[in-house]
Length: 251
Image 1 (cartoon, rainbow, N blue to C red):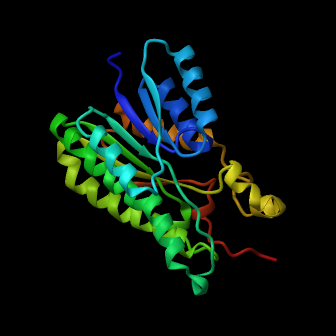
Image 2 (image 1 turned 90 degrees about the vertical axis):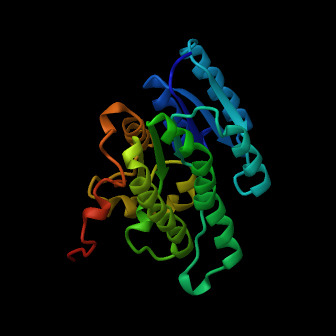
């Protein structure tokens, strides 16, 4: 019951659930939030409690788009002693830049970016007092390379990168690390709408495949551990070499 406690947003399914499992496997107690995946959340909690009966696990229904609900959650979370935060929850927002819809973009910004800033504000002060803590944000390669149709989504993830780098600088001397994982295409339900294009997309990835959720989760668990104590302010792609490639193909 003395395991370090970590909070994961959007932890009931997909990459989030893989992160929760990886953190549990690394010895952490884990709380996670979810929005609409109640059945999946209950099943995951039951799985974890059976596998690790010596540790505490909890799921919290929370819509990060609901500012009042988020504020109430943060007021409770503040001072509870979280060692780590993984902001995984995200909201897509696909449209060409010329068709930018501010209302949709603001909704995505609330979930992808402002939710992180509010949670970090609630948790980082106690991390600083304890002189130890870990914050990991799940960004996207869309913030690192231009991609048609991703203007608003990329902007939310770009803001996340800039914020995390600044927070990393401000908290480094107090033993708190802040890093961003930038996944490429990950094999989750969110990618099902691209099923017809998958083969062509995979041919453009040097590794020749989409990432699995566990590929992202493994890095999140590492960044939460002692071996990552000197890594902060970093943006780490998990993309099979996608952002390393020039992107111009020979005929």
